[in-house]
Image 1 (cartoon, rainbow, N blue to C red):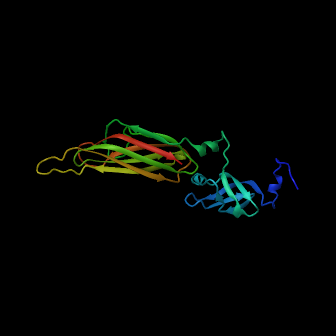
Image 2 (cartoon, helix red, strand yellow):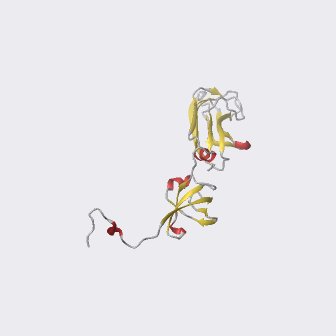
Length: 233
């Protein structure tokens, strides 16, 4: 038997395998640390579907609609392709967010209060995604005379009165002392910290890097080159 040279059909004449299909589901439960999940498909909960795009496992959350690749009839062979995002919708904005936000204040300022105040420090506004997670980093340079100390903290305010306080807590103190009648002098130092914050209410948040003095001395320490970075993810 012979075939036309451009007819390759006989080469693929084996037994047909399981069909490849596509379905949609809604995330009911999602563990971003282990990717364990429950997905509702056609009204039925299915446990622990595999994920084709592993990097998206950090972003999925309950309520997300996902595309599912199916092979054969058993759910154990299905896998999540990714989220379905409709352009221009509020859900799209909440999913994609505004990204990294950062602010720097170089100018020096005296810290005169024992209570936290903004004191001209950096402020950033960004959108917390549906995951409710942000990564905060804060840093500041300080000029401290003997015995003086500074504490810094990130305060945040979000939708419906939601707040966080004293995140990325920084503190530094000049421990130089009087020795043989000689004053230790001014200490120029810096402090930095980072923290993963979870459980935030999705929506627009404003974060501030505030400062307070921690000593009872008459002098006032100074802060400068204060940096605040917020990364929703």
